[in-house]
Amino acid sequence: MNASQIKEHMEVIGADGAHVGTVDRVEGQRIKLTKQDSGEGAHKGHHHYVSLGLVADVEGDKVRLSANGAVAVTFEEEEKGSPAA
Image (cartoon, rainbow, N blue to C red; front, top):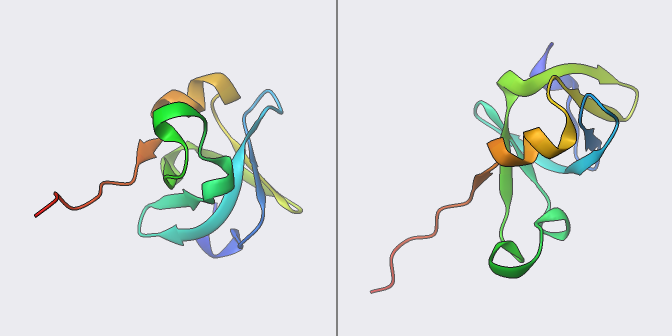
């Protein structure tokens, strides 16, 4: 898998076809998801990240992960904000 194949607005799906998120951009060794796919509650409005290590394939306009959608979500990393001054 070549990270340069992953483009903005591609859908990220689990191995089971479940929607995980939408690509904002690739940052280092992870995919930054758009805020619109950030979840609910305390997670709402934060960017989330998925490790490139979970990417199994890029198929057309979809990034397919090696884990099922529900499992992949547990591996997402939340954006860390700087501490309040």
